[in-house]
Image (tube, rainbow, N blue to C red; front, side):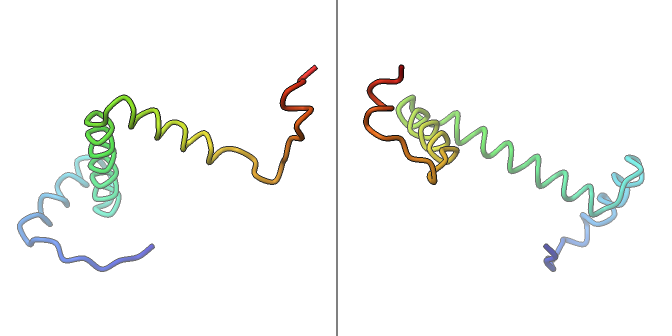
Length: 81
């Protein structure tokens, strides 16, 4: 996705220097920085959750992985033999 953003003029030379030192592009440096920031915020959010909230998130993630097209009848559910 391509977005036009305003970047402070003082940051651009720093981005260029980091990109040159990393033998990368400014775009890649910015993408890496944003990815790192998002990961840190996610970790911070998870660490601030209560145990109950973490369990709810885990259940939600498991439910999202479930195959909703597949159904199980009552016999298969209660008599797995």
